[in-house]
Length: 155
Image (cartoon, rainbow, N blue to C red):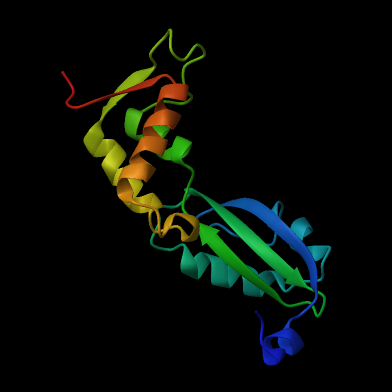
C-alpha cells in the first residue's frame, strides 16, 4: 500500500530505455545519443554518471543499463553486470558457443569458474536474494546450452 506522499511525488514516466553500453565508454554518440536525445535527456549528465559507476569494470565490458526517462526531462538508471554468456565465453576463451550444443563441445570449465561468475551475478539487483546454489545451477544450464562442459576439475 502506497502512502499519500509517495503517490503525490511520483513522476510520470515517459519511457524505459534498455541499452548495452561498454563500461566507461558512454559517449553522446550512437547508441546513447539518439536513444536519450529523443526524450530530451541530459546526455552529458548520463555519460558522466554512467562512466563513474562503471569505472571498476575493465573497459569495453558490455554493461546492460535500464534508463527510466520521466516527462520532466529527468532520468534514473540502473546498471547490471555483464550477461552470463559473456562471462562464460571469456572464461572459456571463446568467440561464440557451439553450433551444436549437446553434440559438439566448444570448451570446458570448472565449477570454480561457475562459482566465481555466480558471486559476481549475485550483486545484481534481481539476483540479490537468490541462493548462490540456484545461481550456479542457472549458469551451468546456460553453459550446457552453449556447448560448454562444466567439470569438477579440468583434466
